Amino acid sequence: MSMENQADTLSVESLFDQASRHTLALNPLVGLRGNDLFDSAGILFNAMLNEPNVAVAQWLSFLGELSEIVVGKSNRAPQPGDKRFTDQTWTNSALHSRLLKAYLAWSAAVENFIFVQTHSQTA
Image (cartoon, rainbow, N blue to C red; front, side):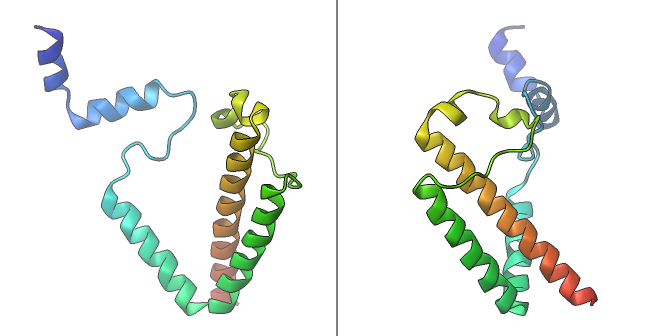
């Protein structure tokens, strides 16, 4: 069987398995369907409509930190042992370092919003 035929016979599941085995870190996007992403965005948007004060506070906090990142004053860093950011480019390149910090700040803002919004509903 030629290499082309072997590639054609691989199922989607086996591609996901191969991708997950050949990455350096866990990849949350392996196996993610477009509908999952769309549904999650809808849930987040509805939560923002239900708790606008919490959403605005988190957004303003994120923008404040983003301005610190842009001018190089942010101390945000990945968790120790986070293998996604072991490449030296993340620390040696000012652009990549700022992109990393912006990603981490955005992630923290969304997590904080979900935490605060969830706990305000249970209180």
